[in-house]
Length: 68
Image (cartoon, rainbow, N blue to C red; front, side, top):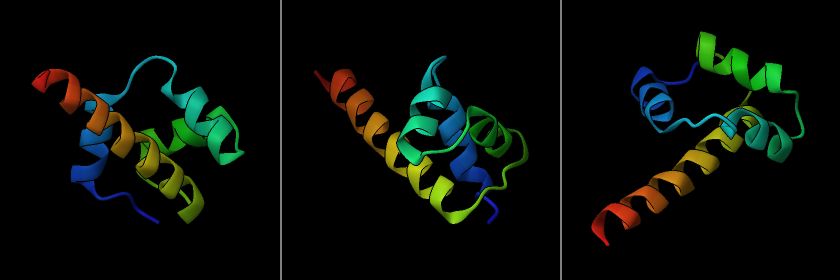
């Protein structure tokens, strides 16, 4: 699937150094698979779901910290 451009942009803005490894571990794939998704905006449905869950949770944590 193709990751919507707006979604990918948000993920890249939230991205930290170790996120790729954390997402890969959660999804049961290699870090190269996650890196490819970031670089090309294309991935399978399972990778998309893992990335979406990870960054939705991270966005909530960031928002909570900013509003504290």
